[in-house]
Length: 245
Ligand SMILES: Cc1cc2nc3c(=O)[nH]c(=O)nc-3n(C[C@H](O)[C@H](O)[C@H](O)COP(=O)(O)O)c2cc1C
Image (cartoon, rainbow, N blue to C red):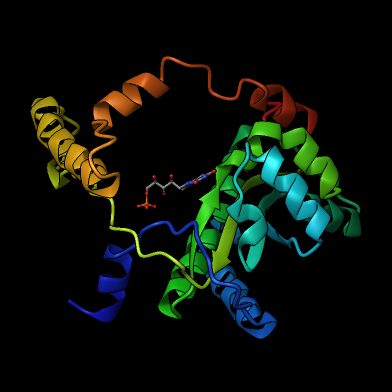
């Protein structure tokens, strides 16, 4: 259709990178693209920590559950939802900030996601690739300490960026009928559509792993969702001043 649409539809995560460094000037342009994203009520609640310290990178590999690309990527960014600066601003005006609303948590987190996806898309437009690292939430308190995050700031995810040393296939997405509804929600035909989609995903894994893996999407999800999902997140967020009310 056009170059932007082709770029968006050819997204895939890349986890192997060459040694080539992304110049700081390029990185800063990417961050400006993140800043250009829409932002709820103009709150601008995203702060990015660029992790250059090699020891911190090594520690983050482990804190993210053993993901070596966190160390080897040219750049590793931690995207934080940040309501601390809003507290500073309220203090500037001698206003007492009403922090801790779940709504603020949602708006700040959404801001971060929009910002980060702009960064990744802009990077991809320059031939740089990457992968999000939600794994940093495995040990979110330790990550917060490592990066000296104050209260009202939490790391939503990391992102590895670099020049690609692999060229993976795109992963097939759910059929349009499952994700696009008209006028009202209905899921009458979704299980049939998902079963057909499962075959595509099996084929994707078969071709990617020389037949060693062939997990269907629904199997993967059903397997994942019977397990606990980072139960430490709720007390952590409360401790950091989020989702108190
Ligand atoms: C918020 C978020 C967190 C993610 N965390 C990780 C991660 O910790 N490690 C990883 O290898 N991939 C991670 N991913 C990448 C997803 O696994 C990947 O996007 C998904 O499987 C779809 O594959 P694709 O990006 O190649 O299309 C994450 C993606 C998102 C959006």
